[in-house]
Length: 364
Ligand code: C2E
Ligand code: SIN
Ligand code: SIN
Ligand code: SIN
Ligand code: FE
Ligand code: FE
Image 1 (cartoon, rainbow, N blue to C red):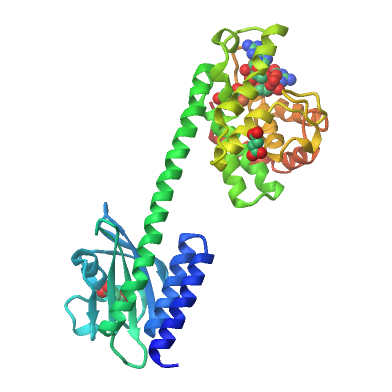
Image 2: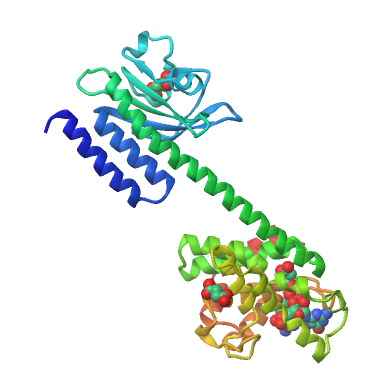
């Protein structure tokens, strides 16, 4: 194969890999690897531009730890600010070059190819840089064209990731607002909802759930009582015991919460809906609203049931005083196998120090 054919083959392979990989870091890393191979460079780095600080952060950097550089210095900074490709043939005799980076990384830079990553509106979002062309060569205009081509992929991958982050941020905010709305009516603290999230995440982790599911339960568990928005204050704030009819009304908060939160297209809200629906189900089938039993109750519902009751017991409610940590812990064990999944109670017991640390950290 001649050089052009080789480069084409690498590009085709590259297209396949970016379709397979998922996370932004993976995508950028495979882009850096392909750029290195295709340009026959020794190293490549991809920097993301932090506009507020006017700095470039390395997202991928072959052979070194992540670095952060000012845009006011260095070849990468020139590329970021001028939005133009920079080619350096002899770094130590080039005014654009910043020796501090070599000092920090212990690398000897000779040649540099640096191209800006631009978004749709031509704003700089980063820099793609190749260092030291192999065999004492220099980077050419053809290399620059190729790197620009790869950079277009990198720029859109970064842009999508930023958009996705913003979207997730918005979702999280909406979710937390909903949880506080229910809390506000109930005169409970946001610390309660937060603690329920943290206890739940801890149990999920010890149960062996994957990272994504742990994050999901941590964000969704605080909303278990969102349905209390639909319950009259007269009941929620009643200082004494609820009569039978009142308690029947109160029980509707599980289904109400589910219907309020459920969204077929959003994993967090789906989980939140399921938790709202199931958090008062009991292991022996005596809970509500469905009377589900054992593993008919999802793992999310079984976990949050424990976190919620534990936290309700150690908190003040309009109808009850706060119990001691020890008494609440004993209550969970007495209800193991009746109200609660015994496997989860064992995990709770095994991690009681971590539970206590959350309790201490987020005291009312
Ligand atoms: P909540 O206050 O957040 O309580 C959640 C769950 O914690 C309760 O679910 C119950 O399983 C457990 N729990 C709370 N306090 C105690 C307690 O003193 N002893 C025992 N053994 N368990 C306790 P539950 O019973 O399904 O109640 C759901 C919601 O209904 C409660 O949420 C609360 O808002 C309301 N509620 C329940 N009982 C009363 C009551 O007697 N008076 C008033 N005003 N509200 C009540
Ligand atoms: C620079 O952009 O001037 C630093 C180049 C390097 O990473 O060595
Ligand atoms: C809430 O989660 O907003 C209220 C707390 C509770 O009753 O468990
Ligand atoms: C439901 O809440 O009705 C089902 C939610 C789920 O299974 O994720
Ligand atoms: Fe509830
Ligand atoms: Fe609760």
